[in-house]
Amino acid sequence: MFNQTVRGMYCLRCSSRKVVRGNFEAQRFYPLRGMLRSILGKPVFLQNAHSHACMDCGLAWNEVDATELRKNLRAYGLAPHSTGVMNAVNGQEAQKNQKLDISL
Image (cartoon, rainbow, N blue to C red):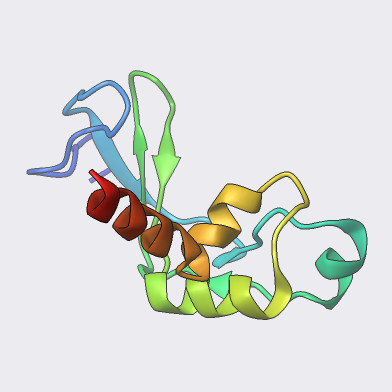
């Protein structure tokens, strides 16, 4: 079982087909935040019980529910350097892009 790769999976970084299934221990994702927000913030739980890792480059991944992640970021924010991400989370980036499309 441990010497078999996951059929149909490939690495998101290097496209290798040598991908194995495993688990992350905590089953939670904590967005990077400032000090106070990291104390008050809550995690987003991983959606899939199984994680994946590439045997060639070492990339490991799982996924979270995108809606829950956006709710979490709206409620608790991100690190101060992540303004562009927060604009996208709050829908401001989409509004800016629409204005650009109209002016073109």
